[in-house]
Figure 1 (cartoon, one colour):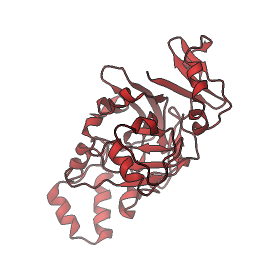
Figure 2 (tube, rainbow, N blue to C red):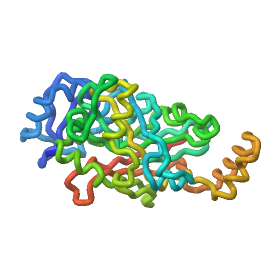
Figure 3 (cartoon, one colour):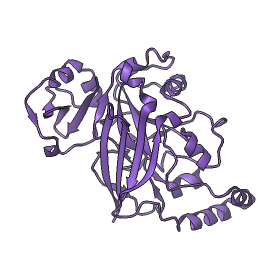
Figure 4 (cartoon, rainbow, N blue to C red):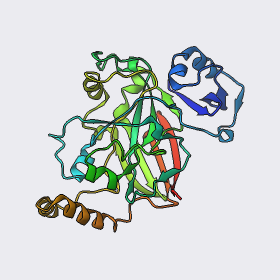
Amino acid sequence: MSISVLRTTDAWWVLTPTGAAKVHTSATTTAELLADRPAIDAATTSTDTVPVDDLALVSPVTAPCRVVAQMTNFASHVKDTNGNPETVPLTFFRKTSGSISGPFADVVRPGHVALLDYEVEIGLVFGREMPVGTTITADNLAEYVAGLVVTNDVSARDVQLPKTQFYEAKSYPTFTPVGPALVLLDADELKRFTDLRLKLWVNGELRQNMTAADMIYLPVQALQALTRFQRLDLGDLLLTGTPVGTALSAPPKPVEIIASLLPPAVKWKMFFKGQARNPRYLKDGDVVEVTVATDDGAIDLGRQRTVVRYAR
């Protein structure tokens, strides 16, 4: 049965039917907490609870940690960028853990960024070390994946695209809101991964809505590839991609072909001039809400709510 772990700046909590029960542990990091499973289990039966609304929740994934992400991993998103899901490779990029922020904290757009985008994603949080060469299978996946979190892979598109790299564009402070809950799952629940529905709203408008069944490379495949070259440890985080519905969308094919013939500086100037007219990019004061849950509510990672602010 799933366990929803919450975090405030001074304590860890477990969600129970009557409220939030404090976890009596000396753990200060996600890794240390996951290593103290008896304390988590004890809190699930506690009757000494407080209202969840009284807690100022922060990210249940603590920094520093490794933050790895899968690129263009939903078929709908690949098609929207004029790609072919049948041929898209399994690709990873890194984000700084300094980009992690809380589920209700502001997302701050740096002053030099013009095109701020959103990407709802499911985050895998690891509960066991995975040295390079670790064998990952469908049968042992639950031994390594402790639980799941709601994440938003915020992206500065006008930094990302012309530089053809993701690290800077997705690593500014507040560009990875995480939580509210770290939901610990058992093996049977983890098998329902593809039933999880990702939703994202901007100012109440539903922008993204797709289940994980649209993923091209599921967690087993991703970890089989990742552990060929990357060590992972307790408390590390893997973002698993986003579905169609982001602000960024590829231009029509004829326009794309014509643009490919232009010098890069001209091409990007033309592209960003067009994108500047796109009203879907995030603006100061926009409210972004994100949920990940199965349609029957049996697994629910909670609801994230962040407000976009422009850096002054």
